[in-house]
Length: 341
Ligand code: NAD
Ligand code: UD1
Image (tube, rainbow, N blue to C red; front, side):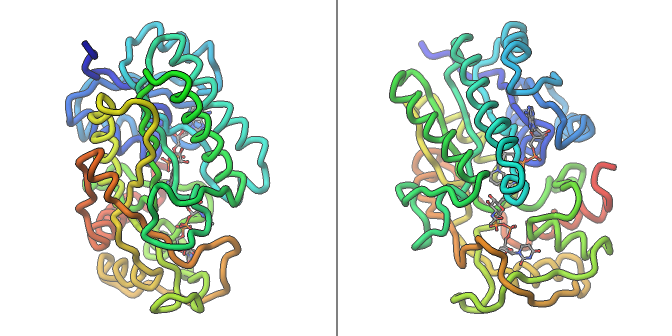
């Protein structure tokens, strides 16, 4: 008989999506073991996770590339499944320092999978990204669309995905949900945990919120001449709480997955940069300075998910609106103007 999943190891659990997912998993009654090296986070989010959702959560400061350290965690904690968030995610940084990205993302995944195999743990939920679709020819994007890595970060995700497919083909006792996130934004509705980028944010929502809170002068819209209805790029923004619940659904579905399943996590609806700016102004209740600048190299005009596979395999769909995303992002940003510092 297949053992029910009770204890989950969450790598990168102190990060933006990891901490929010910890809340969802604790609220659902799971025990959690977090492994994080705090290279892009601190213990504070985990303290706040336990404030929001008191439960069983232990933390180990271990690098996922450290097979010995990971092995010790697996030896002490009998975990039933792993959610693997730990990794580096900034596209520009990956172009400037590719080896570090291959080392942490690919090396970390190899080390983790080896230790999981040694300890007979074959249930995995992996954080992939819609970046694996590159510049998609058509949206909504289905999981069978062509895959292409357009920068080192994207290529690390593609390499890991291929590795997971090879592993599952060699040993179908693995159950792997490879979740391709679209654009995660927003924060836990308590305003206690959220996204805390170091330096100048690369992504749209944290940038807008930092303008709103007075940390930056104005939002520069990267291109107003795209072949879209209002000329700005279209993306599928998904509330991080919906994303967290998607992970919960994936954990629950692992028992029905034999091998590796790729699943889009998005809302299925695209919003333009101008629409996000307007929604942010509604949430903040003030004008947010904005101007239109040149295109950012590498940006696709339009990218949003076909979500039918997530609905079918996970019985999950996103329910939160763009206004919810902006309201929660603003609550987090206004209550924590300098993030966790
Ligand atoms: P994040 O940086 O907030 O969280 C990542 C966590 O992993 C951090 O706590 C960091 O300290 C930890 N970490 C990094 N390297 C580590 C290592 N070698 N050993 C142990 N811990 C390590 O990022 P996030 O936004 O929460 O993203 C989580 C995952 O989701 C990443 O794999 C990312 O590529 C993927 N993803 C994110 C987005 C997004 O927009 N945020 C989109 C698609 C996919
Ligand atoms: C980016 C990454 C992608 C990664 C994702 C989530 C690139 C090319 N892609 O996706 O690999 O998975 O983040 O981390 O970097 N925008 C502005 N002004 C800004 C910031 C953004 O107009 O100051 C626009 C962008 O042009 C884009 C949209 O807002 O059209 C969303 O940008 P962003 O949040 O960076 O996400 P992606 O580009 O979709």
